[in-house]
Image (tube, rainbow, N blue to C red):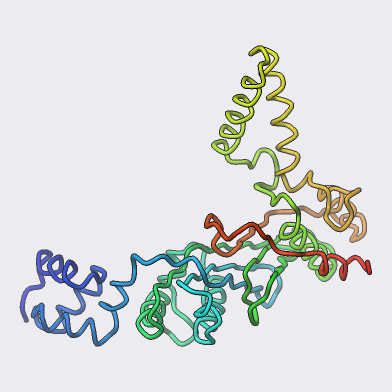
Length: 314
């Protein structure tokens, strides 16, 4: 068998656009023959998929799954180039499978890509085959997993596109030794809040806020205060007040609960602890909106009907 050198792999990679491992395997299967390896990659759909890899994939779905014991949950954003493909049964089935796979991993994209599906297929290979079959670039853009030792993890899907898939999904983890069904229902209501509140929360507590995000907000507020003509010492005092107010708007625990604005999320958790007769802690949340960071137009989702149905409002 011919020696498969790094230079040979590099040559095939440059010609095909396929990944290093795929190129190495192709060369091994074809005794180092580059042209035969190119044909092998095309036959497998790998070269075709690689050529699509630089095309934007901002459409797709967010898939969510809760484990059978209710103590862990996962989200996976699986992207394609068009909304048309997101409605494809094969695409949706793959997204659901990836979320199920994510439950058994640490929730990172790399771990999911390297894991195997219920059919024994490596997830990254499934994605590659879908690209070749459907003809659009696709990617697992991001993923997350939440888990508790005691309590419940709840999933809320908004604008559902099928079973376990939607345009917006939220996970919330409530930890406590109380009745799991009660904790799961409260967690789901908090998930609805995270999805539907006018200002989506950036962190669970002020201490959890990204220092870089806080610094950027401080810079913006400082510049605004200076441009208003205030002396620097007064401007700095104004900024501190504005930062505190901003934190109240973007920190989940101190946000007014969307289903009862007279109550904060922190107060809701405390009330829940009293009702179940044991300590309850909101351990974390994850909010994935499809294509977040990409301009989707001025209109956002309408949550009024779902909030009304859960509050009993007409």
